[in-house]
Image (cartoon, rainbow, N blue to C red; front, side, top):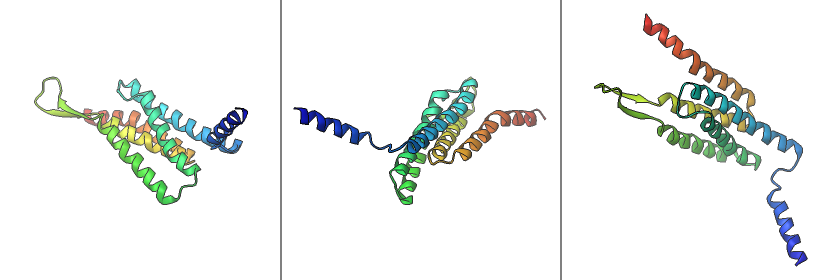
Length: 165
């Protein structure tokens, strides 16, 4: 029976041996944390504006996208395999974003309005930021987040300024 437990123990060690050293652990942790934090920043902005896709949704999208590219990258996948992973992430986020888009009449008006396009685009952007962080392009992820925040925050004011004229 002792040999059986020893075999179980060795199997468990082998199953959790995908992180081989402190450098790899640090890389994985930093990439996933940056993805989650940057997604949370965009989600916080959206939540402050009363949008349904808020902090948790954006954090999960960014973290998931980062994980989808990080795992194959760490396991040594070739460029063509990574290309297919990226295509899957992009298409999957497209379906998620499509679920946030609604079309209908607002306040009994005759015209139909489309709502949720910005939220869908924001989730798509959040996934791209997660991909950048997951692939080790942290500076690109941070810069993209700042640009997206500018679009979310500044552009409505610019549009309102021109609408008043």
